[in-house]
Image 1 (tube, helix red, strand yellow):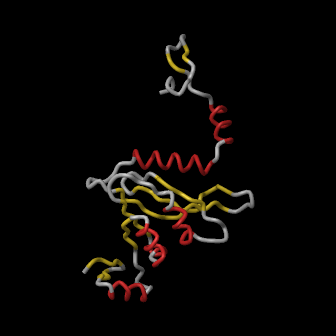
Image 2: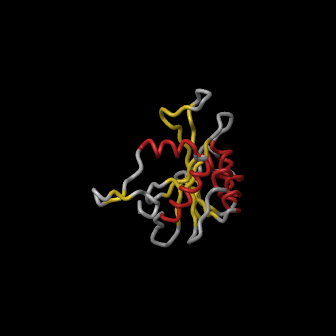
Amino acid sequence: MLGQLGAPYDHFCAAYTAPSESTFREILTTVDADLLDLSVGAWLRECATRDHSGDMVIALDGKVLRDAWTDENKQVKLFAAMIHEGGVVVAQTQVPDDTNEIIQVENLVKNLKYTRGRAIATADAAHTQFKTAILLHKRGIDYVLTVSRNSWSTVDACRVHGLVVTRGRCRVG
């Protein structure tokens, strides 16, 4: 692979020479981080293992990165889509300080491009909202959202639409 990338061949070692750490650092500091993230995410999605039925099942979740700080001395928060089976992050977006991950669903799903099978997203109770469901549906992504028992209006809406709520979960009755 190094030969295909244009690495020099070392005749004494009979192998291609890998770039040094400083070469990687120099290149990565000049690359557009968002574009690199999109490119690597697209490559990972294409390489990602799908479940036995050919579906790509992803979890939508937000995390605060430990020991990562912005220039304004704020902690870095990311909202990501991760493949259930392999734990591979296939898309992510940074959550601005003045907002939360709920508002970032649209930014995240616009970067989810898949070509084979069906995509199914799971999310915690924070994302059990009409807008989230509509955004996922418009992108052709099926979804499973957690329903919190203390959100009686959501529980009632599930029952009105023929869904059964058991132990905080809605399922088709």
